[in-house]
Image (cartoon, rainbow, N blue to C red; front, side, top):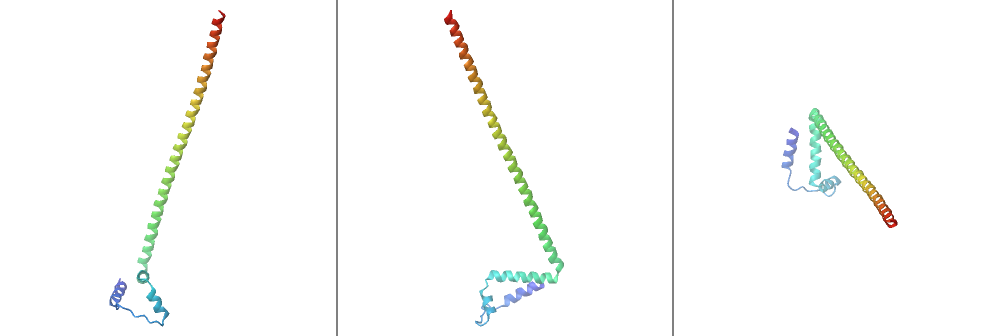
Length: 136
């Protein structure tokens, strides 16, 4: 905490314009970095210093992150399992609907066959009756 405040004070006291010497490669490289890169580097350095001051706090942070990530991973796996179960239920329902439709089609075909057979029997009976009446 003390180091972070001292870094912040040093940055606040830095001059607004920095003159870059053309001769040094390091100075040119620093001048080309974006502000975001500088901020990220400062955060990494600050974290290193905090971990050096209090290793227990640094370790618990990584353990907490690990626990958080594992809990998120477990939640994700649970949602994936739920989604798979829903997909399986939907697939079963579609299969049942398809089987029911096929059975209905078979029943209709069977009923048509029966109606045609009965129709043929009725026609045959009518022909027999007509033939019997003609003979009289």
